[in-house]
Length: 187
Image 1: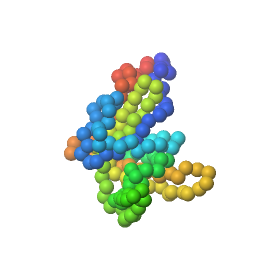
Image 2: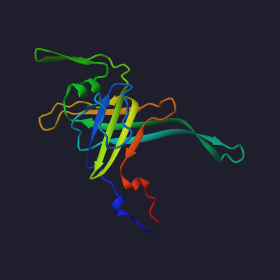
Image 3: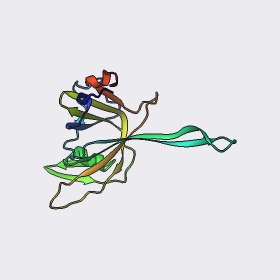
Image 4: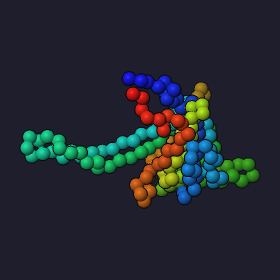
């Protein structure tokens, strides 16, 4: 067996982005994000967690009750991260459907009951010269964590983004310039 330590990746840095629905997606890992896309800012050192879950239904055979097939009954892909930079963008993501109005240097966030707020999301994951870009053309903040106001830690905003399928069933795109993606597995 041949192992390739050069193909071990660590997400050393990166960024999270948000844009309006129907934002034109980048189609590679290194080009600039469109002007309509906003960098969400500092993310906690927990980074970004991608979760891909599927629920299945077991089909049992009459003869012996053995499982003969599993059918996917539902699936979901989510991305979770904690923003630690307080900004208009982050506050409006955290409080879905709410807007900040600033007049003469004073701002007011009118918090409304959450409603639908689908947007474009993206993530850059960087390890040296290896760059992975994740594009979610249609997503939404589906969960938020608690906000703690405390003297010895950053005010933080835990956000979970759910990626919704497009007409062809695609929920996200991943692009990379990492040579390991094109390499055959080590033997």
